[in-house]
Image (cartoon, rainbow, N blue to C red; front, side):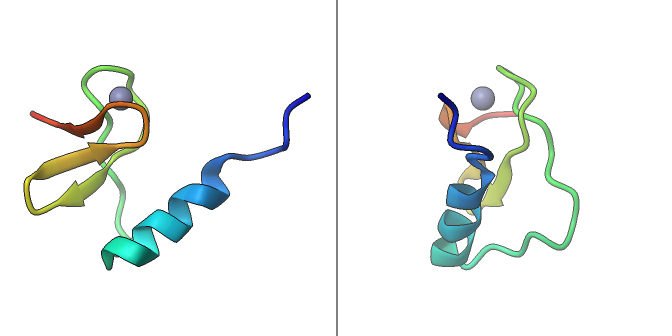
Length: 52
Ligand SMILES: [Zn+2]
């Protein structure tokens, strides 16, 4: 079945990207999931880098 929270993988990605998770992440415009602010915009785990 499910292996619990997939969010654990995110944190590893955040760390690898050098992104702070201390502030609130904006929501993905496509799926509404949390995104990470990156140099090119926002990064969604499902959609990759997304625009505003
Ligand atoms: Zn998305």
